[in-house]
Image (cartoon, rainbow, N blue to C red):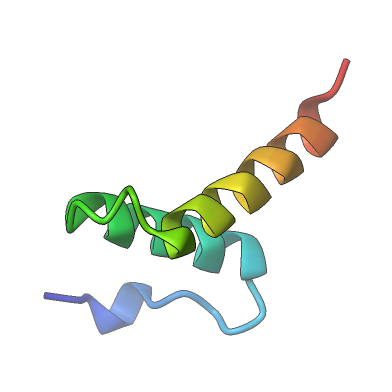
Amino acid sequence: MYDNERAIPSNDHDATLLEGLFQLTVTGDTHTWEFEKIDNEVYTRLLATYEA
């Protein structure tokens, strides 16, 4: 079930990546190339944002 009132704006790429990662995790698809690609991108962005 998806709440359309809380839909991700089409220009929020970070939220879209996190939503994709979350959906793959919930469905148990954590050993696929899609999960690995999104996980690496999210990790890279987090490092770039919070690097000391």
